[in-house]
Image (cartoon, rainbow, N blue to C red):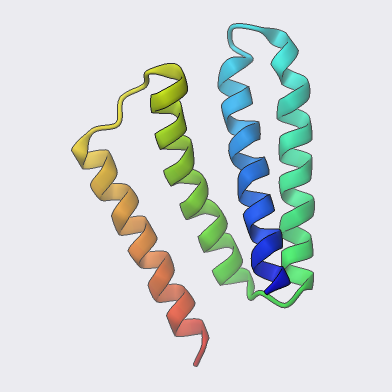
Length: 106
């Protein structure tokens, strides 16, 4: 279970870093949060792998959750578009990652 907690932390840090990158366009002070967010995300991702999560599963979950959360929060924070087609794409990515995860347990 600790691998999943580490993964959740990696996702939160990656999304924070990415949203901070968008904020840094308007205010350069956000670049510090970008650096901390990405460094933390990669560190937690490495710890997730060290805790035993397979690379394919870890990377799939990390990227799918990151894409979904970044799209949602960029809509809320920056009023960027989130169309039905984009939501469908996010759902398809998540289904694909679920299939990879289910397939790795065999």
